[in-house]
Amino acid sequence: SSRFGLKQPIHNWQCSSHPAAMSALAQFLLNDGRVDAQVVSYVTQTLQLDSVSDFANFWTSAEYEKGVQADIVQKVAGFGDTSSPAAKLQTTRLRAAWKLAQDQASGSRTAAKAPVKEAVAAAQCVGMGWTSPDVTTATWDGLWAALVFKARNPEKFKMDVSDVVVADRPGYLARSMTINATGKRVEEHIYASERKGEIIYRL
Image 1 (spheres, rainbow, N blue to C red):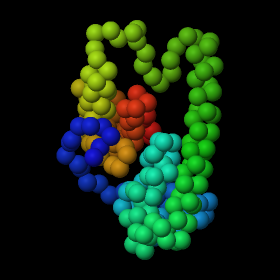
Image 2: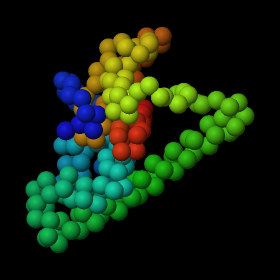
Image 3: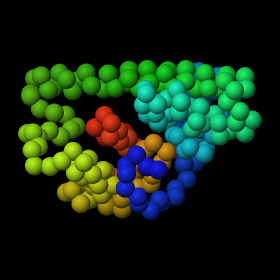
């Protein structure tokens, strides 16, 4: 099931076109996390997670302890028995790797936010975001559905883009599109958390 709630045709495209990102996550899990190679293969090939950031955003802090076990370890051949010492070791290492990935993601977000905060203080504007007066004529569910629809259909919201392709991935939406003004093709990973009421776009 998708966290985006709406079902769309899945466009299959090969993640092998991103070897640097894939190898970065694999190296992180193998070297920093000391995770078994079979488990790493499942994360990068079956779940198609491309980066450390994808791994960090795959679960919320409330989900990850059960998530690494149920979504990954249990599904890898040889680790299906979660009570076995080998499965317990991989679960522990994946949990530690997730925390480390969260720390790295948090550090990069803090660094990225610092200049924006200074700009906001100086100019009273919002950088790379949208703001509005209080919305009083719509329901929460309606607003959330509109945000999800916008993530899937940017061209319908006055974005000057074309050739939009979206694909549901485990825990996020992969979106690629052409920016008409420059002709540049961009790829994004979009994470939606209805519980937090936020949608995060990552290039």
